[in-house]
Image (cartoon, rainbow, N blue to C red; front, side, top):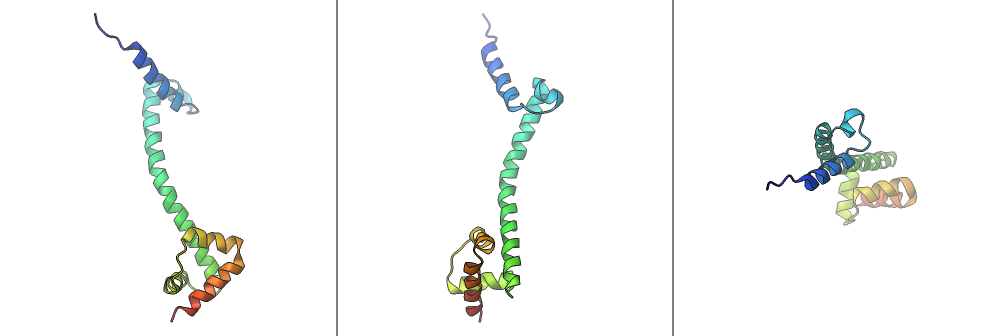
Length: 117
């Protein structure tokens, strides 16, 4: 007697079609096409999770640079001054301070200026 594997095959197809929910055209209903689209979507999601980290770091640096230049200091000088002062604060928190708490950011800029030379 041969094994047809109907149950396993059905589960596999249902899983792929469930992942393809929301895709347009045959991409969400035709198993063969849906499988290709799902594989590509999962690959792109994997890549984008890494790209998102880069994009956010770039955004934070841009914000800190803009805020520090308004206070008369370039980004690189600001970061160097903070390192010289022994301040260990990441770019995400610096960007958040620049937007939400300008007074605290002003103090950090003054600290960086004092420790530059």
